[in-house]
Length: 250
Image (tube, rainbow, N blue to C red):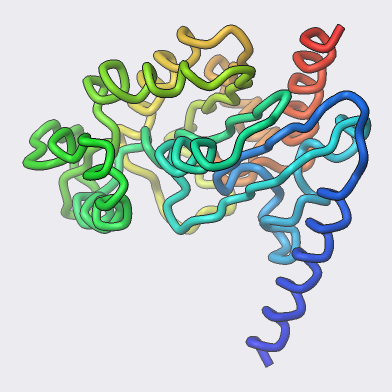
C-alpha cells in the first residue's frame, strides 16, 4: 500500500513539473536549483513538487525549470556540474549550500564524500576532502565537520561559480539551538558555523536573499524545523527573489 501511495505521489509531482516547466515566456528562462529547502516538506506530496515551491505565483511570466533536491546530498557541486551541461538561462536561482556548510558527523561526511568522489576527482579537487582534521564539535559520539572547508570554498569553488552569470543566491538562516520544531532530535551544537561559509557566499554575489540575520522568533515563524520553510517562509523568499528579478529585468 505504501509503495502504491508513493508511486502516486511521484506521478503527481512529475505531472506538476511538466505542466509548470512548459509555461511559455517572452521574458526569459529561469532555473531554480534547490536542495530540500525549495518546497514545503509536509505533507509528503508537497516535497519536491514545484506547485509548492516559492516561485509559483511570483514568476508567472517566466518559463521556470525546476531542479528540486535531485540527489540524496544535493550539493553546490551538483549545481556546478548541472550548469556545465545545461545552459541558456536568463537567470539562475541557486538555493543550495546548507548540505555543504552544515557540520555533519564523520560517518555522514564519509558517505557524502563517496557520493561526490568521481566529480571531485574529475575536477582535481579531491585532495581538499582527504585526511581532514578540522573538526568543530562532537555530535552523538562522532566528530563533526563541514563538507566544504573555507579554503576549498574560497580557492576553488567560488572562482568556478563566478564564471556563471545571473546567479541569485538564496542564503541560510540561523538555527535556534533550543528549538527542534518538527525535527525529531537536536542538531549539533556547532550547527551555526554554517553561517560563516554562507557569509562568504553572500559577499561574493550582488544578487542575494540574505536570511542570516533572522531572529529566533523569525526562524520559528518561517520554518518548521530550523531548516525547511513553511508557506510563510517560502512566500518571504519568493517575494524577494521576485523583486530581484524585476529589478534585473527592468
